[in-house]
Image 1 (cartoon, helix red, strand yellow):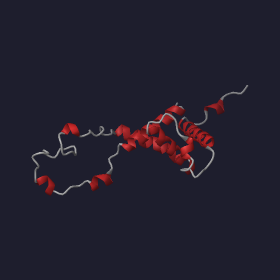
Image 2 (tube, one colour; image 1 turned 60 degrees about the vertical axis):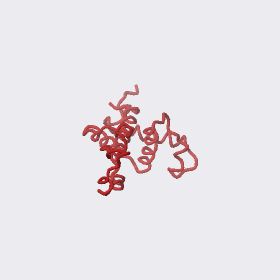
Image 3 (cartoon, one colour; image 1 turned 120 degrees about the vertical axis):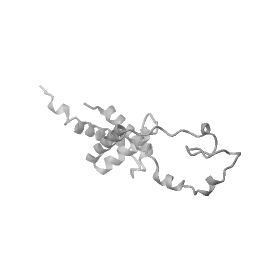
Image 4 (cartoon, helix red, strand yellow; image 1 turned 180 degrees about the horizontal axis):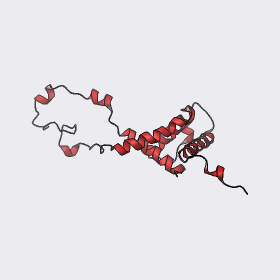
Length: 151
């Protein structure tokens, strides 16, 4: 049984995994011709395999490669959003992106313009809560409160 926080955490991890994908467009833009590498600059040193022209300790290391499990979990979490209507999906995406950046809370008032609204930050928060709860219910096979005896 996945709860609200579990679903939210999985979606945050999915966004972070997605951000670790290599940027193909940037890779094409960084292609260098062979001529600069042919002429060696004694003062700079050899071209470093990690992309720097100095010593390898000056170059920031790339994050570790993704595993198949990371990608599978990301795709599973993003598949949960397929059930949502487009407006809720957009709201979830904006809120989860804020959390993936390391924020502890979502700045709901800052999401209003992106949602095309001028008022109703609390309404966005409640709509987000209902959307994540709907995902929880779908994952867990329905609303568990529905089957509870009221007598």
